[in-house]
Image (cartoon, rainbow, N blue to C red; front, side, top):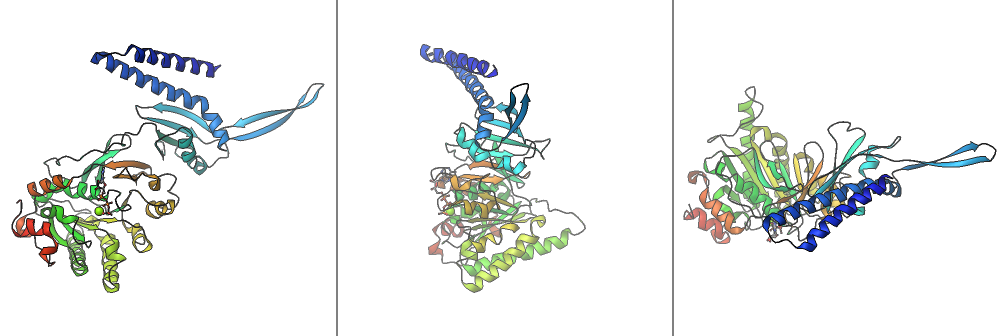
Length: 441
Ligand SMILES: Nc1ncnc2c1ncn2[C@@H]1O[C@H](COP(=O)(O)OP(=O)(O)OP(=O)(O)O)[C@@H](O)[C@H]1O
Ligand SMILES: [Mg+2]
């Protein structure tokens, strides 16, 4: 009976939309009305579809349990009655782009069984993406599934000039899959960004450094770089950096310096405050390492060992002291991942296998944050794990070379603080331009 009603309502809505499409309205008001109606019809259709098909899908996916009961029938002997126990679909809510299902486990079912159902659910309903997260209440027995039916972050967006205000706590990097802005916390966090070559790590790097630019200009943030890939990436925005290390030796120097700063700050803060609060002249120290593996996996044995020791120390002591690390890496190999636990937040861009996703985001995370399924053409797209343990898909805004240069020339680090690394200037055209002759400054 219910199903007949659902189908009739759905049919009527589809008919209304079809009529409007045939009329082909041209006036803007009519077009808006049509779009609004189409959106209502789409959401109504999604709602109906999930309500109607839920039990069937749950049963086919093996989430439900069938029980056969034999009952005595008067005078005729026995009869078998079949009963299904299904996980209960408590609510279906729709938005312009997604459907969220609140589902309660059936009796005798583990929450993990329900969570593991997410990829099947997404495939059945042709969702572009999905995420699983706990509800505010009854998180021990209930799961929220968000299925993205229209991908709002499919088309890339370009970053704009950062807001001209000092911000060190968090930076705006792009959008979440819900279309809402994505802010990354910088203070008190060590960040690890992992993604295959060409996956768009640069957008995160420049999103962080570029957004800190107004704070850099007033010395509320000091950003140091380690770029052992010839300095090509970081020198683009060289004026934003206090120093850029391009050799293993320089990198070790930077790490030692950071450990010393963190130690001194920790001593200063002891008994005064639990966390350092950056201010002009008392900055947040940020160490940006592009291609962490070139320091911890591919470098000479001596450098590698020392770098690993210093970095591990830095990662374990520094963040409350206002000294943080943002590291970028292509390959989540063992040497790098050994350190993963010391980073307080991890961002997984496109990876090559489910195994890599598990290595980067944590054991068993591949079905919930499938970074290995991100398409090559979706550069800047990544999976993250939020503070409450739920996963989300995000897309960073793209930072063009031109924007990086403009931001760097508008918000350079204090000139007297900037020191040129010992690397041969000819190897670093950006550095030469911006640091030795003042560049855009
Ligand atoms: N947020 C984004 N949106 C759209 N396109 C992007 C985005 N970020 C990067 N791209 C595109 O992807 C290309 C590769 O990006 P990027 O250089 O940042 O990759 P990467 O992960 O740093 O690679 P590598 O590890 O080789 O340095 C860029 O040249 C650009 O065309
Ligand atoms: Mg890169």
